[in-house]
Image (cartoon, rainbow, N blue to C red; front, top):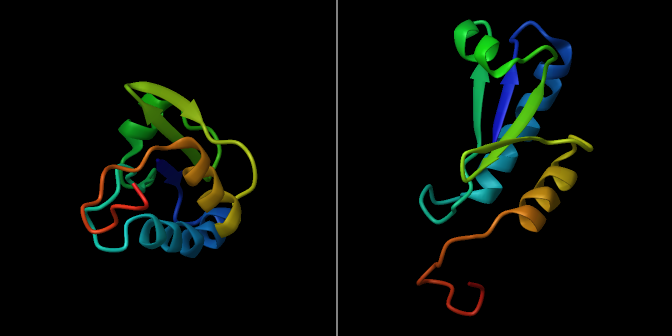
Length: 100
């Protein structure tokens, strides 16, 4: 999942800590998830944002097998965490045999 943002945008500023918490919750040890949570600053990477057609901030997109999807719905931590849980598979975790 990628959050495209502008550092001057009030909405982006509000979503930032939620997005960081989501990244930590989804992948607490850095290597046990098949879901990657990234953000792209459209101030620093204008060309990437332009190519992606980003017109509003924050825009969240996700990619499955190379196909781009817009993430619609709420941007609360719980809503995003539930979205990840419902829409993405987790990779096998040898430390959690019962959960994978």
